[in-house]
Image (cartoon, rainbow, N blue to C red; front, side, top):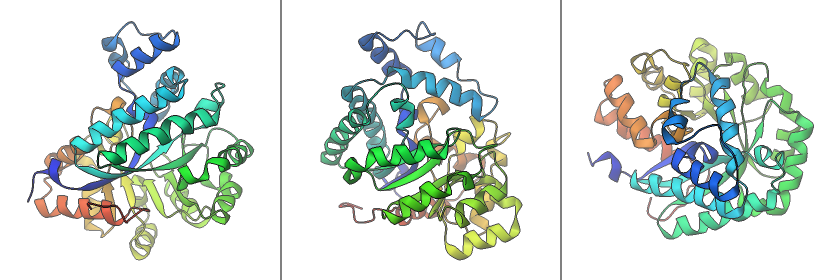
Length: 319
């Protein structure tokens, strides 16, 4: 089996804003005159002690305040691209949260200008990046609809829509109209479900939103009928082990459900979620579960194969 870093693989659950490393955060804050509540990198990393998803989101949104210009979004994406290429990622379908920026007064065209420039540069280095526009589920569906409409002039730059942010109390069905609109536009659809929310949220994402992949999906294993549905329809699960550990979704990696997902015949993939905050990029996640769950080389190869087979954009040179 070739070295993991040399294996071509896809990353399907990566928030670009979650790749904002402390060094870059501080540099952009200084460049843009943004005052952060942290004196240095050590102080930022000391804040990475999360009891749940909301603890992380509070820090995550504070970090986005330094992203103000097209050059900032370019720098952020190129930082991720360099780490992904080093890990053998040849294709990444990356999330971004326009509402986290437009609500701060950053025009959506500025966001797209920086991201699209970086995507062109990354392609020249061997990494194909496709964008998935995510809606913040703690905001209203009307806000999401307005965001989708504002993004349509840049339709060529994104392939799908997703649903992220605070899960509990914000069921997928809340966003049925905007996902129907996305389907009419021919956009791919994904949603975070079953991370902290119940299995019912996974059902809703499938039946009400028509999603093609489930992001996370850990709690799907609590419902045998749901597991059978996911297996029957070949719905990929974009699992993020180190994220689950840092957000206390699991008590330990040895208790992570990834092994059970594989044993159940599910199309499970490994991803890094918000790697700057959770302590590891994609190969760190592979290695962590390989050790904790005693995964074989065949298991790792299966996970890599699943990642490539679950891409929305499948025809990528070199893979």
